[in-house]
Image (cartoon, rainbow, N blue to C red; front, side):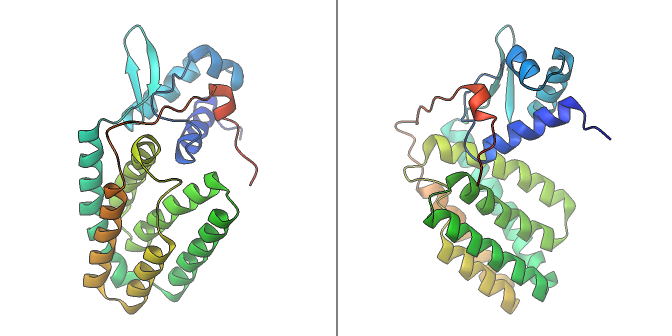
Length: 226
């Protein structure tokens, strides 16, 4: 079955945001999107409405659709929410993690390290987010997993806009320590390490001078070759 145009548009925009190819504030022109995906504007509007419901796109009357630009306060709120959710995820994951789960997480860490070493930033970003989503899958709470998927996407926008460092800023060592605690089934240590990890990410944010990154929409929606 052919995938609906609105699903293709939504997936492409989410992938581009997750890889920081589509930065905060980018205008999502209906005409450009309809041409790129060979569909009509009704399909585009449905995709944009869905993304607006996920708080990824802002629909501005008489101006169009834009990738959201989180304010400093929204950035703080999102990281606070992530810490609360991921601490719960950590405690649940510690109860359910299998040998295969541990293997998969270590594989993600290794791939992330290779992507960083070879300067493949989009892949590094994708893998960093995948690590956190995988922990949520291990926890087995689909509601928390869905919330985290949205929050990590919004975090990517925040890091792209305000991070004083580069790429994902997720430390390989911190991810490894998290997996070590998970393997031991140490819920308290795991919860603490997750909280500390997210605090480090937030501490790297600088709200004094947001980055201004310019990309053409068509160029941004073309997936990089890894």
